[in-house]
Image (cartoon, rainbow, N blue to C red; front, side, top):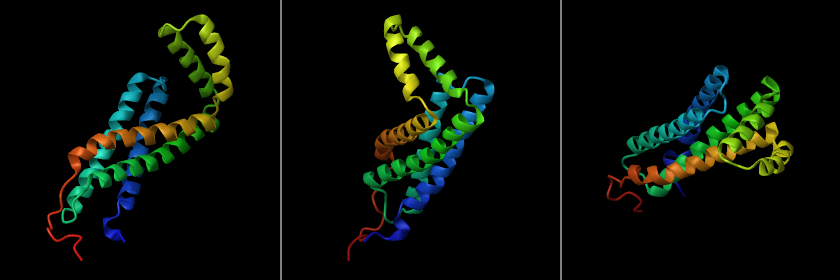
Length: 177
């Protein structure tokens, strides 16, 4: 049975809270600026996720040097941290779309249609796609999409970062009964 002091869950929860709050702050800043769906906002979101994962992995590795940090533990820490952050961020997104600004869904659909036009999608294809998006797009759907995407990107970034943060145990007899 795993020693509770080596569990990644408390650290993932606390750093997930920090990451979730940073994601909310980022979203609020771009919302107030009037560009909530900006591509630059997305880049900053990725930077927040990567930065949060690095801080948590570094903290765990430094605080548990005697047991080390396996690749699997780094991956688990990062994914769990991203899950907690995405839960907080998804709740915020739901409140934003459902209670704060009910027109945000229409603004998102207009933004999406504009991106299709810029991307060279034909008018016939846009006319076929937009009714489907209008049916699917709701605060619940958008929040769920945020939950899945932040967790997924946290997992992907943890796959890479885990390589750099894994560390062998400094205690040669750790785990020997």
